[in-house]
Image 1 (cartoon, rainbow over the protein chains, first blue to last red):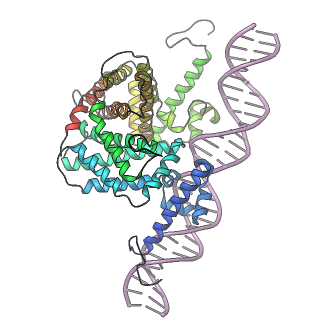
Image 2: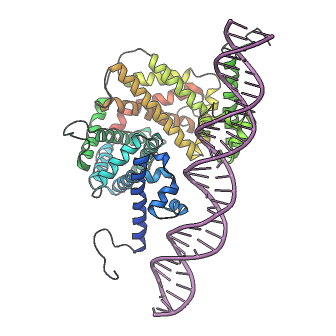
Image 3: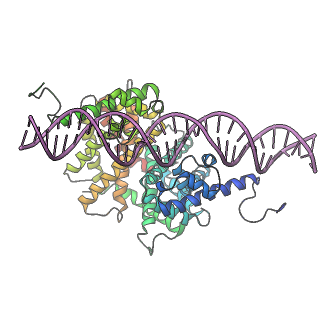
Length: 217
Length: 217
DNA sequence: TGGCAATATGGGACTCAGTCTCATTTTTGT
DNA sequence: ACAAAAATGAGACTGAGTCCCATATTGCCA
C-alpha cells in the first residue's frame, strides 16, 4: 500500500482518512456499547478503549458523550443545511425547506438509515439522548432561519413569520421521523424501510400542516 | 409568631411555607449570583451558602443547577398546563392552546414579569441555559399533546396533526417571548412592559401563523 | 532521502455537578 | 410531652469535561 488510491470513499490528504475512520469507529462503538448496556452504564473510558484511542483524544472528535451517541443524526443535519444553503429555487419558502430536507435524506450514504434507526431507538430509551436530539433539531432550525434571513434580506426579529417557518419545518421533521421509527402507516411491516420511506413520512407531515390548524375540539 | 396567619400568600400547613421560602430564596440567589458573575463561575457550594442551606438539600428543591436558574420560567409552565387542562371550551384547538397560554401569563403573580425578564436575559448570554429553556418548552408541548389526546380520544401517533398543533403553540410562544424580551413593536420603549404586553406579543405570534405558511422566496 | 515544522495524541491532574448513605435535627399529631 | 414522620446536612464517591505538557506521527520541502 503506497501510491494508489485503493477504493471507494474519497481520496483525501490521507491524514484525513485516518481521522474519519477513528471518528466512525467511535460512533459505531458508541452505538453498540450504549445499546447493549445503557448510555450511562458505559463510561468514556470504556468507549475510548474500544476505539483504541486515549480519553483526551476523544474530545477532539466529539464534544460530548451525547454527541458521539447521536453522530448519525448529526450527519443528517450537516447534509440538510448544506442542501438548503446551496439550493436556489423560488416559490413557497416552506416547500423549499421541505425539499431540501427530503433531498438530504434520500442522498444519505448507504447504510445510514440503519445507523440512524439504531440511534433513534437508543434515544427513545435514554431521556438525556432524546433531549439532545430535540435540541439538535432546534439548532438546525436556527441555522435555517439565518440562511432565510440572508436570502430574503429580512431580519427575523422584525418578522415572526421567518422563525415560525423554521419551527414548522423542523416540527414536520420531528413528527415524520417519529412515525418512521414507529413504522406506522402504509407499507409498514416491521418498522422503517430505508431513506425513501423516511422521506415519505416527512412529506406526509409537511402535508398535514395546513389541516392541523383547522383541528377543533 | 404563634397562632395568627400573618398576611398575604397562602396559609399552608406552615411547614410548606418554609419550604416555599427556601425555594424562592434559592431562585433569587441564583438569578442574582449568576447574573453578576456568570452561570458557570458560581458553584452550587456558593449558591447554597447564600441561601443558607446545605449542598445536599439543594437537590431536594431543584433537580439541576439549570433548573434553579430558570425557576421563573418553570412557574409559567406549571400555570400553563394547569390552565389548559382545566379549561373546557370548544372551537379550534389552536385557539384553546393560545387562550390558556395568554390566560396563564396574565395571571402570573405580581413581580413575576421582572423575574422572568432577568431570567431570559441571563439565558440569552448562557448557551446551556438557553438550551434548557428551549427544552422546557418542548416538554410542555409534549404534556399539552397528551392532554389533547385524552380530550379528543385520538392517539397522536395516528394523527400527526395533534403533535403539530403542540409544536405550533410553543413555536408561537418562543417567538412571542423573544420579541417581548427584545422589546420590539408597538409601545416598546425600553424592553418589555409587564405580563399584558407579553401576552400581546404571544397573541401576535399566533396571528402570524397562517401568513407564515404563505411566505415565498 | 533526511530532517524540520505542524499537527495529532495520550497521560494525568483538576474542578465540579449530581448521587447516595446515614446520622441528626425539626416538625407534627396525639 | 413523646413518638413517628419528614427535612436536613455532612461527607464520600463517580464520572464528564477541561487543561497542560510531553511525546509521537505526518506532511513538506530542500
